[in-house]
Amino acid sequence: MSYFISSMTASGAGSQQVYQIAIDQANALLDQFKPKTALAQLQALRKDAWDGADQITKWKILTNIGAAKFQLNEDEEAARLFIEAEQYNKDDEKALCNLALAYLLLDKLSKAEQYIDIVLQKNRANERAYALKVRILSLQNEDFDTIVEQIPEEFRSLQEIAGALGDAAGKYGNLQKSQYWYEIAYKSTDPSPGVAVAYATSMLLSIAEDKLVLITGKATINQNTQLENIIAIYTDAYTKLADSEQVAFKLECVFNRGVAWRLVGNYEKAAKDFDLASELEPENDKYVFHRAELALVSGKKDIAISLLENIKGSKAYPAALLLAEIYKEQADNIKGREILIYYLENDPPSEFKEQAHCLLIELFIDSEQYDEAEKESAALIAANQENVMNVLIRARVLRAIGKEKEAQEQLSAARRLVHKDSPFTAILALAGRTPLTGGRKS
Image (cartoon, rainbow, N blue to C red; front, side, top):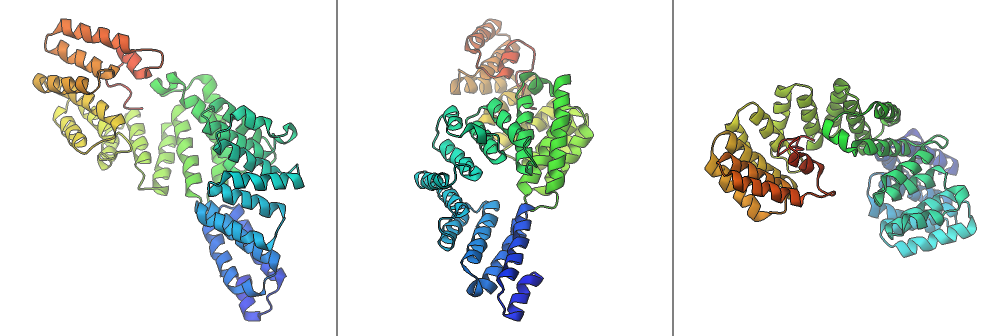
């Protein structure tokens, strides 16, 4: 408990000025993204000062507790507190905006919209109201361009509004427009770490979605310049967040910065960031998997194997597939088969299951276990004969057992299945430019 809160009980004075100092302390903690510490102080303040507090002080206490809960992703509790607080500061713009946010969090969008309209009738220049309006319209699946049109042009470049438009564009999958609005928000005065991270991430995604980058793992010269800017933004944001209690924010900074370092070819710094991410959230397989993949591409197979062995049962990330691929390259087909057979027996996700089957078939072929390979490939075709990779692996098996005519028929079938929307790895596999199971390492 802070000196200011403890002094209330000691003196019994209940000074509104002292209460305000305590509230300001909590506000400063929230600005520093320390909601747990702020919440502890505010709950102590509510207990000790409530009876002696005036209406506005009660509103501030409840509102800030709600804000702390909101930062902690306790949305329903935050909403309840915002609604409870309003009775102590009726008709205030901030209180009404908080009510709108509360009903948004409770998925009562029509009611949230009503309070936004009230605020804008009072003050048509209220930035927060327009930002909330964008979020409400987005949740109502309003056309994005229509959402933009409902915001007066002179307010669209304000940080909170532009950031909300960036979020909305991202929700609709429009990366280009999302990046455009995040850039506007970022270039406003004193951008928040949240806006900075969103802008950097939107730029990183635009590079990561480049098909050439996906295949080669390397960026172009022009992209390297952009990546240097992305790294600088993440570094600045992380510096501001380093002492915060917002682990999710810090994770996004360091992990995505690691991805950027990897793309520019600085594997050492990428490894440090992935390791830091693992320290922040040790139970998350994501960071271990990407650290292992990085070790592999940088020629450190022993480290990669050690990391992947620890998470080979992961269902979120294809650690078992990558580990089996390494053993396959080392001609240790027995270990590779054992890992995949165990993996397939434990109900892996559908997006990895077919790839695991394909790799297992390759291992059977390499081990000259043609009966097993033929049996597995026939089962894949029976399960899904529209999958290009299944057809191609079937062709490889048929060729391996000397059935060239049937293999050519399967290759022709694969060509008919490929179209402009096919996975890029399938197109490359058909062209003979990548292994049939290519793409698992990405």
